[in-house]
Picture 1 (tube, rainbow, N blue to C red):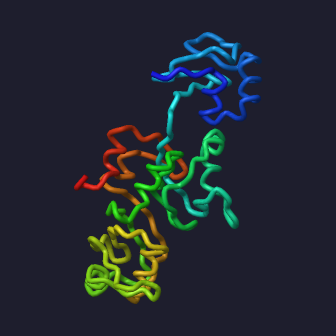
Picture 2: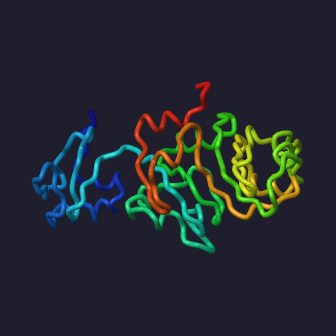
Picture 3: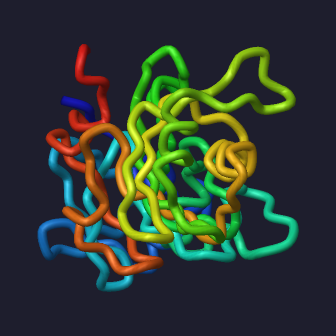
Length: 240
């Protein structure tokens, strides 16, 4: 059990500075259990705490773990340069909480993007030592051949890598699409592997991380959801 003053609770949840949160409370904009609380010094147990600000209900979360179905032409950066950042698709509170992407998708790549404000979680999910498979569907410029699949499974040499990189699994979806599973997470890896194998990636979508499938979350492009404990467990390597 953890008890915090109401202004600290709101600040921890990304609603602004302590001063701004105190003003919200004193202005009668915060309710708990249907009752307006206008004393910012009032303390509450944060376990399972729900509160309402501007008539919108929120649940206290020590850390935030979400998945976004990323659309094209959004950058996975807190300081985007050429396109809007993915944080513009989320409530403003997440920016204050310093939410950040777990790894990155290219601006033109769509699909599953994890985001969190939990540093150890981000590090664990990003570490190549964890061998967490990521599943992509790539649309190719040239037709998919058996030789292409074989090359990607055997490994292709990229100019800045000391050894060939191979797909964990790879299969033909249709004449111009493959499903490819990678563990390494190198820069532009799918696109570069296809180019090294003599084809070209014209569209790329991430559909799963670990055993968590994007389709199971029923998110339209641009939509997001919190991940619960059972879903977070699906992100762990099978051997852990």
